[in-house]
Image (cartoon, rainbow, N blue to C red; front, side, top):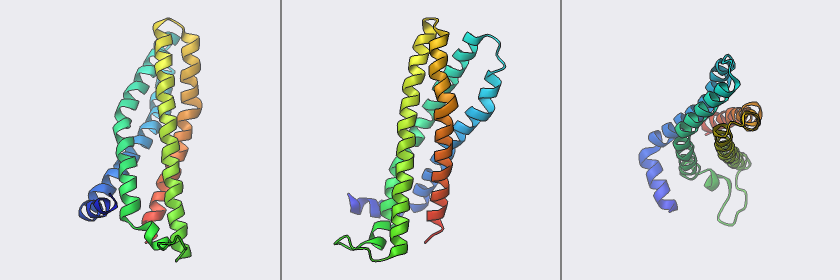
Amino acid sequence: MKEFIYEAFADYRAQIIFLHVISAVVWVGGMIAMKFAAHPSFMQIESPLHRLDRISHALKRLFYIVTPFVIILIITAVFMAVGLGFREAAVDANHNVIDAHAMTLYQLVHVKEAIWMIMGANLALMMFLRAKADKLLAKGDSIGAKSFLGLIGKYMVPLNVILGIIAIYLGVTLRNSY
């Protein structure tokens, strides 16, 4: 499998990096647009039930849009981490550090991947909570739905935006380090 990744990365390096970057842009950018453009507009809707319904619907559409990009981002991250040879530059076959700077970069790769995985888990939880809110809205329980949607808007989306920006910064740092 490792050889396949090396060959694929060597043959499609620009495409893999492009897919990785565009996936991060769509995911993080979509959340920024939702939080800072769409959400304030939704707050102008006077009917609380209609407002919650619109928020839930918009989140559902956002999640459908970003999910394939999240999958692409994770797959391309693996191809880049292996294909760029961060591990081979940092440690030998016996796992001894052979270059301190390369080891720092290799560790940053893992930090960045961990951030994207945390963001993915947070996204999955947001999708679950949104679906629960949708069911509550269908039953007419706007208070219950508001509690779930409020968690998503106040804490979970901002967390993913912050983590996404950090991951993108780490990606730029790693890209400019070799």
